[in-house]
Image 1 (tube, rainbow, N blue to C red):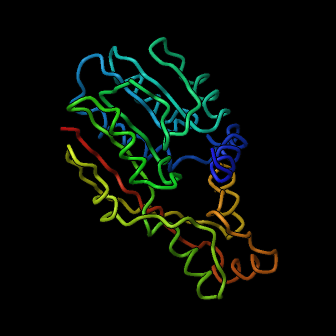
Image 2 (tube, rainbow, N blue to C red):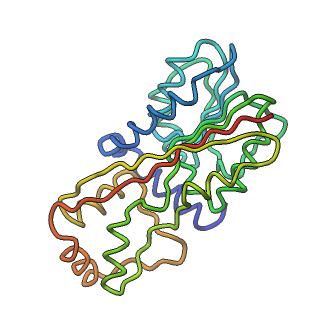
Length: 252
């Protein structure tokens, strides 16, 4: 695991106890992912989850699927333990794993599913290819990830003030739709979810509470002076968005 991935894992581990109180949007998206993922499952499916967090999607999987086996993973060890505690089920195994580089030699699944975790992949297309290699014929990869309009107002404020923001560069939906590997068929759908924040401090605090505050690699945090500039520029009760891409790939 490289230094950036270690920082991501540590940030999410640090937020394991506070995640639930600030993850309403994540729960909303997880519910939609579950709806997409649980359609047309075979009986007794073998399911792999990437980036379980505290179990928002995991609970849907375990309560809505009869039989089967589940391998539930996350890069952050404290998240794995929180999910294990919240989702006790004899069908489930829990593992700390970097989903972008799955250590799953010889293992195959009917469903691989992930909600708002794959935006942390350094190379999303390569990660998708590695994961789909573990699907059985007819198996599906279903996920949600962040797209390029996420936090557009936050990023625009930086640009207008001549500052550099630390938001990772997210792909467009069209780019995600071009990442499908050979030997199957994929499709995407899109949602734009509006959120209002009391001020810039509230926005930054919310990201830290859920562990999603690791900046793009090489970014230096704003100085207190520049953060105050951003806060004044955005003003009170500013609105920003989560641009969600839902991807679904079926292996041929």
